[in-house]
Length: 229
Length: 137
Image 1 (tube, chains in turn green, brown):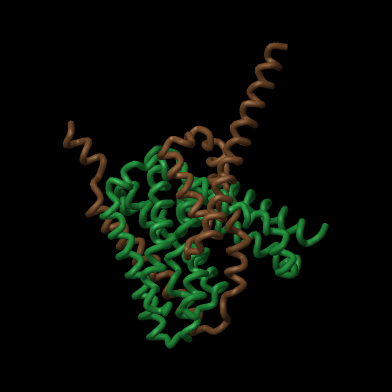
Image 2 (tube, rainbow over the protein chains, first blue to last red):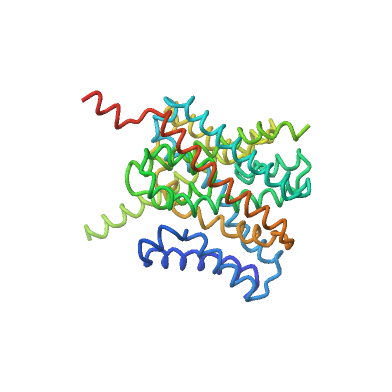
């Protein structure tokens, strides 16, 4: 079997196994460990275990990455069920702007205190936008596009790991949860909300998350303007 | 014989539901790429496609029921499509402890701050539907 076929089948098998393990795990584990993290560990084990060249893995798994585009378009489903989003556009927009600004200020402060090189800082700043947008921002602000995409994805993974732990304590409106998740965790958090949605309230949170993901991308680009020119 | 016909019709109807949904979603996906090519902007084409499809749903040019089966399937398994990207992200991490500390602090700290702040502000500012219903009652 070629590495490309092994990469594709192995990634799908790792995902299926991670989902199965997640469903069988006790509630505490299900809440604290995202299935994507388990899937990542399994895929990494396959990749490093088989000593697969990165280029071969990438070309084999390209069809999966391509499917992200139609899956993002499909986020219109929960979005179209959340009519309250437009009615509350101004407060939601304000919350997203302040959330993104706080993240940006924190990043700049940490990078200043730890004397992080300018290109790494420029790659860390746009992580409240989805990776496709952070690549564009990094290119215009002397960052490294691939690194910026990696940080966006890692921030998404951390957000999708933290939100169920925090949500168990918050017990607020589904819209608030969705807006917070979409702002910080973009597609990864939204996909976790979507895959675990069972009630209309869960669907409302998923719709809000998709909406916040789109708005946070634009807001992050605008907040990074001072570094772009 | 009648049962076999019912099963056949049900299968054709499911294939039609999924096929039609995938075609519509793909059409708007490519439309997003087309718009991005004609008018370049710092915005990913699939998000443009999503907003265009949302506009078409609001204008009743497309019914939600047409894309429900295919869209739900894609959303249920969206995490799968992130796995190769995540592996690439982990491979790109630096080896310097100072840089790793900065990355860890900004990602964990920033995520916690933004989650808490955005959630708290939304809780204060967004009108709760349940409160509205209670007042109406």
